[in-house]
Amino acid sequence: MKEIGASGRDAWPKARGLAFVVLLVGVLVGACGSKAPNAAPATASTGSPVSSASASSASTGSAPASGASALAVPSTSASATTASATTASPSAVASPLVLAANQVGTRSQVPWGQIGPGWFLVISDSPAVWKGAASAPPPAGTLTMWLISPVAARYAITSWSGTGSDPRNLAELDAWSGDGRHVLFGQRGDGALELDLTTGALRHIDVPQLNTIGFTSPAGSNLVANVDTSAVDGTWTGQRLVRLDLSGKPQVQLAEVSQPDLPPYGGTIGWLYAADGSTVYLDGPGGLRVVSNAGGPMRALATFQPSDTDCSPVRWWDQHTILADCNNDSGSRLWLVQAAAGTATALTAVPGANSPDNPVGLGYNNAVQVGGSVFAQHLEGCGVVTIHRLAPSGVGTRIKIPQSLSNDRLIGTVGAKLAVESTAECGSPSWFGFYDPATNNLQKIIPDGPGDLGAGSALAFP
Image 1 (tube, rainbow, N blue to C red):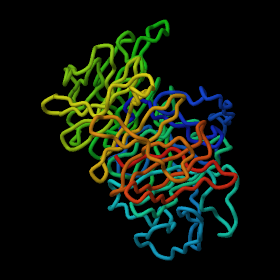
Image 2 (cartoon, one colour):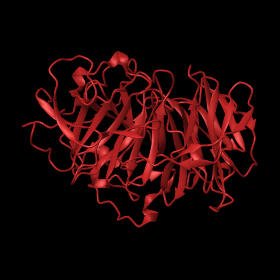
Image 3 (tube, rainbow, N blue to C red):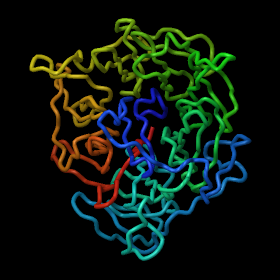
């Protein structure tokens, strides 16, 4: 999955105070009639110090800037609750070895050198490992960030109170660095929070007028941010895409788009880095654009849709091909774009109104390949998405995932399985797990337990 905050369409609130109200595909779930969140203000004291990023780290794998304090992480030295496909059972962990399926460990047991494709980060509400008796449930409103391995072992990285004033409660989990050791929480308009997964330390990065933020490729040695621009009188004029150092200091402008030319359906400049970090692919009218990581003029890469259609890069389909999402008044359609030649092939059918003659509906905005089949994320309306198996025609049929809560979000793949986050239509409860479409078996990893909101804010390794 992509290492970037490409278009902002997959932004998800990250706290119990926000009730994990899901912002799917850029459509507010509030359209479903959900109640407004009542999270505490982020300006109150958290009890967990957050340092200011006044100086750049030497590298993305280095410790945070001086003054950053590690947040408390629950002990798992005895046994802890783990999730299986249907039940939860204790599993003891006694050594810092690679954990087996359903085992639970701490961040000190993470095999950092093995993190890569097939690993996931998921924030859960309350199904957490907590200090105290292993049999006692964690306090209500506890949020835990989990690192999940390809075999469904999970490592507790850090925990915090979702009902308090921790700054992460009003931020969105935006990006994971290519070295596997850092994540970014975007604070819209105010900057970002960087969490060092190896230590639990949190620091603030000042980025005024921030929209979305991510890491550069391949390892995350710098940041890239989409920021608003305004006139002297404060009137909003458009957006800029800028590369920053790790302290938030601007290095180079990659793109600038004035207000009339911004995409009407995403509202932000979308971007995707080449694997070596030398090139940045951008959204554009009717196709994709490209710019050097060193800056300079944007140029058209490919134009394959009408100019009133906004096309944005989603992620890399393979080493040479970009998966692009093009949307207009009719809906979203996926294309495969050759990065070198600029040629494009439609992956999904033309979207339109749901009818027996046009089952594509609002279209598709993400897809993966598993076991010779293509699975795509289908837009149902009202912020709800489902997962379809695509036919060669580009028209899909919904797959019926066991224990689905009706809103199934496609997070990524692990081997022949799909990584899925399933929620109720308007946000909670939710679970995260691995689904095998060949056998129709589901392995729940973060469950939707009684009284808990369950899983949220899932990211696949970039």
